[in-house]
Amino acid sequence: MNSKNAFIFIFITIVIDATGLGIIIPSLPSLVSDIAHISIVDSAEYYGIILGCYAFMQFLFSPLIGSLSDRYGRRPILLISLFGLGIDYIFMYFAPTIAWLIVGRCLSGMFGASFTTASAYIADISTPENKAKNFGIVGAAFGIGFIIGPAIGGLIGNMDVRAPFLFAAGLSLLNLVYGTIVLKESLSVENRRAFSWKSSNPVGAFFQLKKYKGFALIFVVLFLVFFGGMSVHSTWNYYTNGKFGWSIKDIGISLTVVGVCIAIVQGGLAGIISKKFGEEKTAVFSMVITFIVMNAIGLSTSSWMIYVLMMPYAFSGLIDPAIRAIMSNKVSESEQGELQGLITSVLSIAEIIGPPIMMAIFYYFTAKENFSTPIYGMPFFIGSFAVLLGLILFIRIIRKDKRG
Image (cartoon, rainbow, N blue to C red):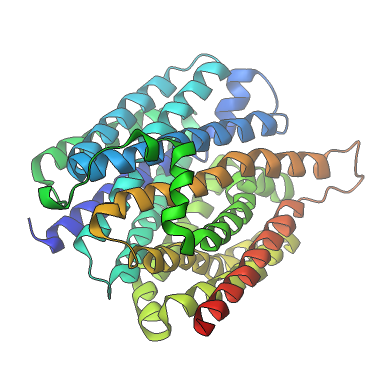
């Protein structure tokens, strides 16, 4: 299979995976509320823990999956991950308690670390000149998945809060069959490297930073930006429901619109912008837009304002592909899986601590016993400050590199 066909498969794979993830998002808070027999508002704390567990497992397993793909190839790791996700969605469909749901999300995080392998696959089949564009198109695949997923999840979830999990399981297993038939290996035998437990666990992986010491501060930038973004990802359901009274269906529609915007920006504009301005300027531009828009979302007073801000917010998705391209172009083919695993682990730390912190902030500033008038936008203000810190640090990195 040539690189074009391989890229199409990975694109479709990520679309289906993102669709499966997007399907469950609108109804997950309601499922938590239903299982725990508590109100939607009180489910916020459990929700943050559940999101954090998913990220914690990605943190643990991303280095391992990245190293395994460097040793045994991308294909078998991707297929195993797809199988695991499909079975796990079925497990979560039948979850009778919060504990079972948490275990299910942990398994989702473990198998969901396949994005590490997908990113390494893209690096394998890309040239240095088109990596930013290709990573951007991968981001667009997520956008398309989030067009389809939340729309389906919002509709199905209104009828049965558990049904989206079963639908997601079907998509993952269907994709497994498709991949088994058409997916070819992208990493040649001569470019594979020996497996090492030292670099395949999260603690050992971070010691591998010494191999990438020139990237140390860039990892900090990625962490700050992603941590800031958790304010949107973690509190969206609760923010829009509490401030504007949105239903599961409304939230599903809003996420669908966000997905359309992301697909337009990352699929249609990422390559153009990075080619014209370069990855560094693209990342800076995206961080500036993200900082402004996150504050604007927090200050919004009407639903229509949220929809107006969705397109500029989609430009936040250009940060990750631009920075991944910068880093990927500086390592060898045999290190792509390790690097992508390390990036995923760094981002997973933000996902581990971000949701509980952002949900705790949201819960505190909206509790009636603390404030007579809820401050729904506080997580967005704090998140935007983290993005601002990342922007300042990234500009300093660029200036230092230019000085040599």
